[in-house]
Image (tube, rainbow, N blue to C red; front, side, top):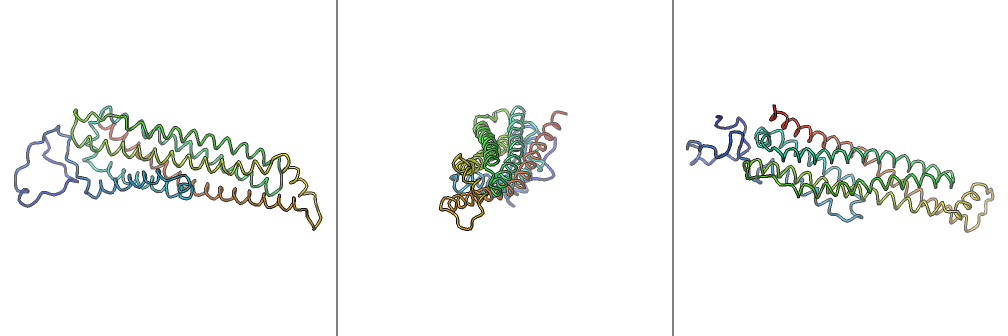
Length: 300
């Protein structure tokens, strides 16, 4: 039986204790002692979990102005989680997780699927917003109405994803780690993984819901501008060649200018989301692959 691992993330013993012989392990051979929360690796992970949860708990107004920051927090959390999973001690602790390991794999698979669908929805939304902008600039009411309908469909899909992510956030808290059948190290690592999954799910729900709300808000403004009365005014604006315009025509131009501005703001937000969401999706896949490799090595 191996006395210890080559790498240990436990704090070193004090000089008065370091010369004493090692006590026999109280658990099975794979079990190791993980460091306390003040250790840099675990402290770093806990810091990122708190940051992700804090962002997810912001109000919609604050979240809408920092969606890129939310994605960055989630990416940083999974980078820290990757550092933990690279440690032999953490891998040894998880190798005997059994049913808990299957639950963790399922949780991260659900999150990866949700972010994959989010990327697809963001691409569709970007196309719809670009189409709406083109319609506004060309004063094409019918084309704008069609783009708004498509944008609303994309918003509904984002709202559905937000609801699914909220369910993922609740699910980990219901999971038991069966700590009585393993070691403290196993319970500690499993607990950190599920905390990370729950925090990611909460942030994902907030992110998806925020983007859905932003899209719905802009779609409502655009829909109002392309109502029957306003569409007729748009046609009039295109056909008129007079230098002097009526007050209604000036008002319509101002309205369409405001709609174009809102659409451009949403387009900029979507462009920020694309790069960040791709990074988060990759980090989720990498986390699940690392867990799957540990699980597979244990089986074989």
